[in-house]
Length: 107
Image 1 (tube, rainbow, N blue to C red):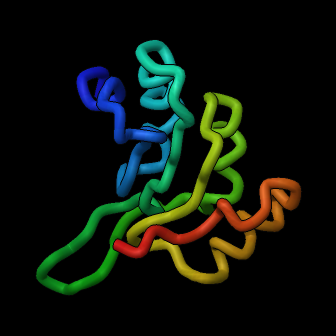
Image 2: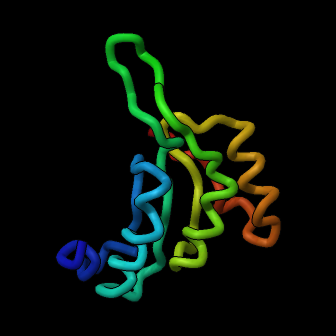
């Protein structure tokens, strides 16, 4: 991450498609090596079962988890795999002053 953060074309760095529980610690580690804005777009947790084509296991509502991401320095938050429109709506409602920067990653 440190080698990429120094590239002149990089305007922010972030975490994508990672279990929500890992995000705060990863953001703190990133903040220790860069002053760039931090982004968090984790998945909904659990594990992807390729055989069934479904997410299985414990899942964490991202709107609740996002408070710890913002506390750890995230300036933009959203969701990736396993999140849906209802979760993104809850996320936007949890941070109304942050506006449209809260979106679902298109990946």
